[in-house]
Length: 278
Image (cartoon, rainbow, N blue to C red):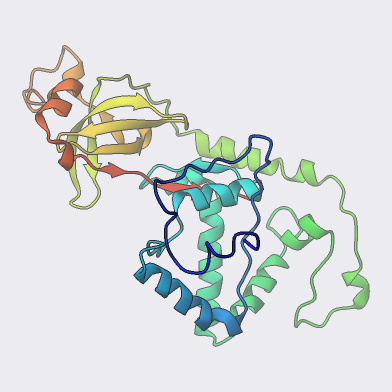
């Protein structure tokens, strides 16, 4: 910029025809973690961004974009896993952790205390059946709280056989899976019914393909919507079986007919993503 300062004096375009700028192949891309802006610069930064939006240089962005989200995950070695909508159970212990944190924060708000104190006490509470707290499992040390305890208890301590104690989770999984059933695998073209969460009505749909995540499918409804749903909330239509004599699903067209009879403008997508555990 110092060498060609006359070009960057004002906002303008290069003269004559547009120029094509390419990055050298040997240049290595670097993703830096986002940094916080100092409080004293917030107002100045906000005014600058509003000016750039008014000039049409940058579009207004009110939420994280897809590429920002993925780059953030790559920069911090976070694996981003797709989560089927309306099936938060597939996100595992992340949903449970969020629920516990919300309960603790709500309780501290009702007691007119800082939420950080409640979270500190939770991290220092021994886990039932394990005898160790979250802080002890991660840092091998008890955290200091407002409770009066001896300083000797706060010394670091190496806990052994933790992996053996954690095997109790396998017992819990075994008890949970006793009443489970293996669902049949759906194939492209199978006619199914799926519940419309908004109006609580079951609608007919067609399976398009199976996704990379376990027990998840891409389907198309009669309204032309492409949805991603978990197998748990998909019911195989009886029209796929010869023993079914009803005509409730006889009007359900094939996949090719669904695509052909609907205009492209009516096709929408219902997709959700979630960060997995860190």
